[in-house]
Every structure is written in structure tokens, then in C-alpha cells.
Length: 361
Image 1 (cartoon, one colour):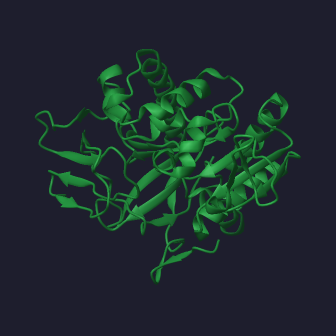
Image 2: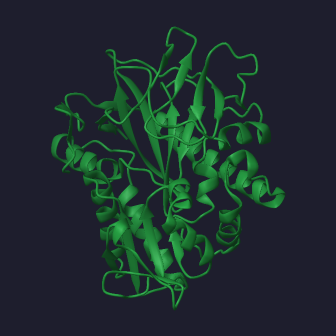
């Protein structure tokens, strides 16, 4: 784990750990599976109605979204819900990192190694690695998405490279062939209307650790939109629906009062006095504003051009001054474990620490 320290401060933090009860683990697992079910129903509703405008998805990607949603063989690997949960009451969905979630290596592998060395008799809500292997095995058995070679790509970042390497390792564990190249090294061959790698081989299946909303705006993305059917994308284009913060008010419209959801609205707090104002597209807490309950603050950043949504405030619990967010992983459509990140302030950002956890069966 090459990114264990950020700006001189520990990112991997094992001076503390979080201990859960079995009932709390079961509660988080149930909430994760339930909210994922709601998300799939929301995608179906949006595709059926053509309700893309509020998601700020341009027309160019809509055909690719629908093509991927209608293809039962389309790869759908992973995602991470962020929940506010104190151990009492229901986990409350803060957002869904459906397209390019990180903190995977530390959740799937590093915290398990920590538990095995320090608390070998304890258990951990963590079958993330096994879920990845099983999901790649499922992809392999479907045998309809460009085998035998799967390309992986990311920008030049230690964390992104390690995340992609873990995913490649899981794919190779079931006998799939993989190769990696950085995003800027992907080529395009006009004569065959296909993406190619540095060896000139056509790219038929591509895992991209790069958000759909960024790709759409790139020259790279223009070719992706025009080349429908040429590439099987992981994650599929329909994940762009769920990675937008606009999904939060849509979920509340479709399932008002659901115990795992927070009230959320477009463009206006709708009478709420305690709320989070979130850009439709943003990452790591950037440009988020919290209002009410003594936590008024704003995180600076480059986002917000597409507009904002307003979500009821669910203050994070505090343990010795630290405020944890539960990152709950969906692998191949099923809840497979959690990772905990904690911050000193009310907004979880890119410097928030990863802290291991355990429970006693």
C-alpha cells in the first residue's frame, strides 16, 4: 500500500479500530442490499422515461447507457455506498460511489491482514476480495464481452494504479488475461473505428478507473460515444446514472420515507433547516456545504457548474472526536463488506483516514 501517508499524516490509521456487533453487521448488509435494489429500480425508471435531463447526462451518452442497461451480459463489477451509521437506528445513505470508487485495496486486503495478525480469533465484515474473484468468474463464464484479453486503464496516480492492480489480480486469479496502460496511452484507429493499445491490439473490454462524466467531455469520449458496441466498458455506462448526486432526490421521489434514505431535493432545500448542499458532480467532499446543527461549513473545490442537490443532514457520529463514514461495498450486485473512513471535521475528504474494523461472531 504505497499511499499509506497523505501530506505527512497517516491515511492508513491503526492506532484505533472500530468494533461492531453481529447485529450491526447484519444491519449494514441488509441496508446495502436494499438500497442497491432501490438503485436498480431507479435506473429502470429513468431509462424507461428518458429522464436524463436532471442527471445532466448529455444526449451523446444516452444511447450507450441504454445499450449497456439492456445487455444482461454487460459487466457490472463494483460500487461503494457511503452511510452515516452510529450503531443505533438505520444506516442512512449519503451517496453512492457507483462508477469509480477507491479505498478498495485497504478495505479488501490491508485491513484483513491487520485483523489476521492482531486479532486472528475475531471476524471482519469483509469478503470483498472473494466477491471480486467470483464476479470475474461470472464474467468469464458468460464469455461474451471480448475475451480473452481485458485492458485496464487509469490516470497516473498511486492510489488509482493500486486499485486497478488489485482488480487485475482478481481477474487473473480466474484465468483471465489482462494488460494495463495509462489513459493517455490509449489510441484510436480510424480505419477500424476501434481503440488500440500501445502494441496496436484492439481494445474490446476496458476497465476504466475514470469517471463517465469526465470521459464524456474528453476527445477520448467522443470516440467512445460513436463506437457503441465496439467496447464493453467496465463500469458500464448506466453507472453514470447512479454516480450522479442527482440520483439522491430521484430515489427520494420514488421511495419517499424509506428508512435508509434521506430526504433530498433538486435546486432548493425545500424547507429543511439542516441539510447538505452537494454538487451534482463532485468527489471527496469538494464543494459540499453543510447547514444546521452546528456543523455549518463549506469545502472548497472545482465543482458545481452543473447545479446542486439538497439532502437532509445526517450528522456523523463522534468517537473521541473522530467522525466515521461507513463505506459499504457492493460487488457483483451483492453486499460484501465495509471499510471505515474517519475525519476530524464534519465533511469526509481526500485526507480522511482509513481505520480497520472487526466484530466477534
